[in-house]
Image (cartoon, rainbow, N blue to C red):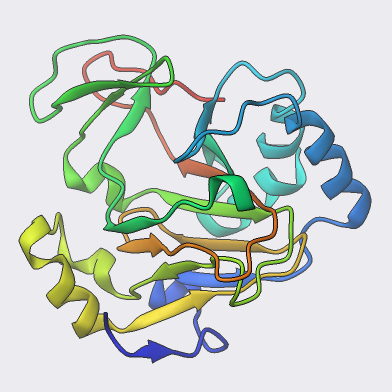
Length: 229
């Protein structure tokens, strides 16, 4: 693992990662938790689509959607949502990796897109890297995330390295350094979707609920359609 760097000076424009504090007030956090409380927790997150009421938070008029628009422009659209619910009973870890797929509504064969997979009922496909490079990911924190509660780890600058072969991941993390994404309830971490990231097991497990939403601008080519939320 690379040397740890301070998260305090990270900025989305330069580093493609930034902590935005206090985006959701306590009432909004409570409402969002109630909305998501019926979703079944799984080891590596559950994909969300067709959830009544979610668009009121992540769509153009919602508090999360408005933040996305301030970062990407008014055409920012939520194209995938995942709920992570880490508890003492589900204290999983994720190795360093890049997000490499997007969720779509149906299979359409388009040059440069593949392979295909299905995760939790949602159809996914690997797009050309440029599609991922133009996306942003917002991680909405519904619980406090101190160092002991498995904060997300990111390697700032790794998004500039294109699609990184698995054999080169460790070297790229060492080159970029590591930022531990600590958060308070209601904070949002925004980062470039293809940045290398990981999550370790919590050393003092509590509950760590995170709503992760990927945003894009524009349509996919060749008749492919984003799954959306």
